Length: 479
Image (cartoon, rainbow, N blue to C red; front, side, top):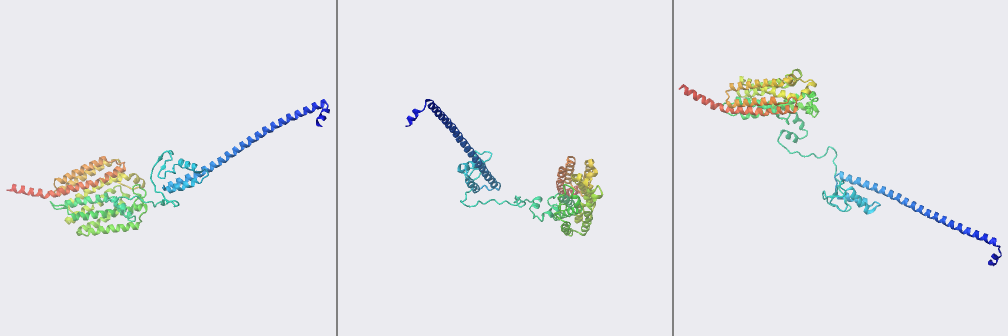
């Protein structure tokens, strides 16, 4: 039936239908192509979008990973800063890093990058060379699940101080003393014994010159005057610090003295002064009454000397009169009275004090000028060395006259010559503008005292022998 109907159609209608059919097929094909292209583009777009999302997720995971490892790194450095290099600390951080989302490989790579090898528990890796394994120290491993003991950090001020070896030097004794006793020891200058030596040596010269011909100096007298020199030097320092407390605060060299810095108060210093004076009085009472009266009269000089630097440019002269009073006491304790040789020796020692204390005062001349304290260093100025030369000449003259009046022998005069040589070297090599050199030259005077004492002892021992030879020659000549 269909074929018959088609045949009945006219030729034109048939052509028209064929055209329409061909057009439909063409448009259908074009639509299929367009749809196929759109489908392909859509698929590519979806794939691209999916890749973008994957990259975004990966970036987020990487950021989280970096934050995790940054925290782990901070923890690691925190443990290292507290000196806890125990493997348990690293194992704890290692276990923490293994729980990150990137797993075992990323964790091991992270430990290697930050400087720790998780597979070598006895080694550390230097951060500056992350690829080289440098074994530093072996640490014991702990049982699993135990908490690593961390090193306890001591609060500031309680760190353990390094132990200092004890020595018998004055500084070592002061350092080893209890903390509450140290200010008192520094108040009496136990750590600086040069003042005691300078007080003691002139006393030994007097004891040696007053000794009998051919005999050594009395050891008991030497011991008593040695202890007395220590006690009276301490008493003099305390009195000086009590007067000069306000001045000492403004001078660089003296600002740390116990009274100036507030370690001790006035009444504590007064108690220490009472102990020193009591000990000195006990020693003085072992001598004859002439010596006791002579010693008691020296207290006026001891108390008033610190005031002299406020009123005169010659406080060193008053210091010499005060410091060498023991020369007179020693002579009177042996002979019962004062004689001309003892006065000459006292004058020589006073001049000697003016020499070394003028050098000493040059250490503080700038501070003294600012605060208004007077001294021979400020008075003499650039003419200090010529003046010191004059003092030395007068001192040597007095020592020579003393030896002559005591009938001393040649070893004594050799000692006087050695003293003169020492003074010349000291005066003409000292740098008066260098406080360190002034202090060094000042401290060297303890050896000068020892040299002179050796000359006195040797000269006194030879006196009897020479006297006997002189008597024999006199008898032979008379016969």
